[in-house]
Image 1 (cartoon, rainbow, N blue to C red):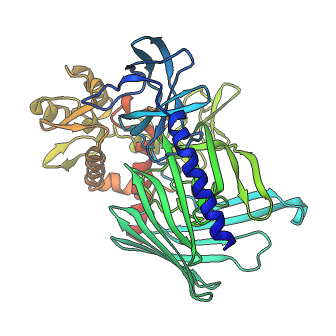
Image 2 (image 1 turned 180 degrees about the vertical axis):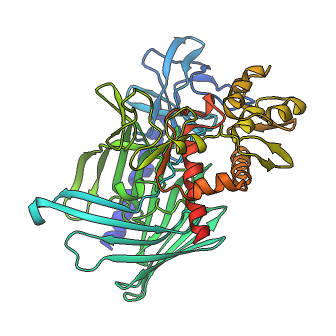
Length: 526
């Protein structure tokens, strides 16, 4: 009865206050008119919202539609003019569907919605695969005060994880699991332990449903996944067979900016993570959010490891602010900073160095080969560096056309005229590179290249597929096939350009293609 009385009292309170709330929240702008656009809005555009009542205290903010509650995901626009007829501002770096907010005098009003263009935020994945991750942390109970968790991975020929072993500090038995893939499912089975089974139901390569069963405890977790375009936006379901929970993911500009874990039963924010970034690319074969944030994504710890949750965050976090409510200690708040060391070409004392070894020989020329690597370049010293170059004159047939080198393809696609393209295909060596000067067309202006008169977007999946097919054709040349198959060192290409906008084949695309091909050929020969 006391609980019932309390509910009635609360209801009366809300009813009594409703009229006043409506009055307080009445939009202070008269004649509001948000412009309509045929095409999505771009960051940096100047926009005017018409209406009377804007003041110097008026601020325009944007919030992703998925997030209907205030938070650090809101992005402020720069107001450039306010007058009696409206407010003008410059659109910030936001993407997708956005709520337009007016904030002034500690109050907030929703003006309407705007659709921004979706940012192309693909990241070039480096070719090498992670086999082991050692996670070190301070631990008073551990040997020398440092605890270690060790993750070990194995892969199938498509680069997918097929087994995972996690040895946690202080645990006598490791967690081990196997992964089985089909067109619409990923099944992860624990070996030993609690013998839990995780089943992801997939749709177009994205997880749509998840269920974890614990046979020993007769309990299960079950979740449904929602996406905003290509990005994961929400996970909603139950844990331990009874506790409702919601997890929201907010991406802005291809970066995960906020994660919120909500206990639906008690309406508590268990965890709120706000991310800030530097420029460290998330470009290893595993999405490292699956390791870095495993302690925070409580319900599905290895969520991002299996590449089934849409596009990954382009960058890794520099800092994460963590806050929320703990069942035992109440409210909490702290920050964690991240620092990354990446093995790449460095400059020491004016000399380029890779894996601790100079790229320059005693004569001041760039070396083509080190103890553990081959630096491909037609002019580099060393036979492997030259014969692995796209410029080397390997003859092969591609789509019915005879090519005298791989480079002749990359230069030929810069020619609109099919007849001129055929002539370019006959070139090899440095000539196949220099021939680009003969093209009357600049592909960089719009990103369009040509295959036998047909347009292809250099930034498209269709283009990537074409390149894969090109190299499969190239390794039909027995000499090229042999040199790749017998190559035991990592292939790098320091002279290659890094950005897709600068070249039809970047350094990273080249390294990925050749390293993958040599591994494929080795497995084939075994």
